[in-house]
Image 1: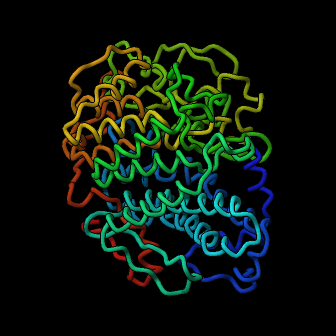
Image 2: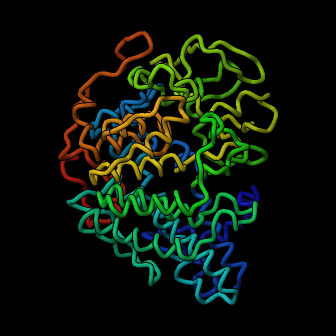
Image 3: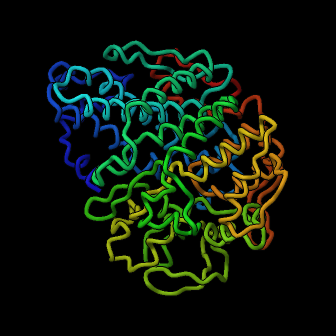
Length: 501
């Protein structure tokens, strides 16, 4: 997409002013805000810089997916001590590897967004242009704060909120009093973003992948869900469902094909462009068989468990779309194969992201750089089916009937309708519908209060063999992840570690 071309062509000197972390001191000689934000082109350049970090391998390729890996749906796969320790809620993962960078990466995007917000009013351009980029900045800041807040914040401490009215200084910023302070801040920004952003239909194709009005409504519904504000979660999900021009695709498998990147089910995704300098989420290559049967540099991480496979009802079409099991016939590199694995601990592989790999590997649909194995799929971060399930959950938590919403999901899966649906039905559908996605099964188990009992059970492979031992999840400690040690050190101890970690 042209969005990527714009991002790639931004010169380093221009990005420095926008991409410096809000908590860092600007380097000597770096352009100042006063010298940079002068024209509409400066605004566009500065706003485009918000998206550049998203295409780094450890942002939406792996990154926080190492924490989603804690769920009962998958195991790490290849040996990786940092990820294995996190999955086992072992504090040895602290101060090691890519999980140390996730906090900083998101505050980098927040820093870019804050500069857009501070300066957009001074740019000589139309109100429509100002509103569009201000809306984008508010959305991107909100998305980053949300991921930080639910990962690291709880009732004891939230995450730092940067004062966007002034340029950053050298003084460390303490954590918010609690996560609700973060959520309320996010909600206020998202409501403003929703007022300013165009609809997806109003965007030119070159801008597909940028935030839009319905994406703000959808994220609002999820934030309110995490706040346990059921009425508002249902309200904003309903806005999407009744005013957002969204609908489920008829065929579940079609959701994960690049020709449907911006279909009626799209809410917000990370666009993929495998040609030339590849950009996009590398998740499709990360979950691919290690070394790709000798034909491609698959990485072999995040392997589904028998527990996930068995969760599906026998005639649920989503199971085959989601998981490859031994003996399944599939196409890889334009050749029909029978699935087997030489590296999967469980014997399974996620299948959702495999569509691009069925074509010849030199067709341009898959990155030629196996060290950055993205495809032309815009990997979903949030999609319409999740919004439906958010409304269903919010209705159930208010003691209301959610049969219509749950049965919308079940009907597409080829399943019979249910009546009198319960929270257990909701949990089942959410797990089956969104497995292996950024919706975050681990966070669901934590917020439902199910994590301790679930993780006390071993995980198994296709033949029933134990592949992951039972784990000790302490809800008083492990309801949040450890703050990266580097942030505590760099703040001189102003930023405190979560209790128990």
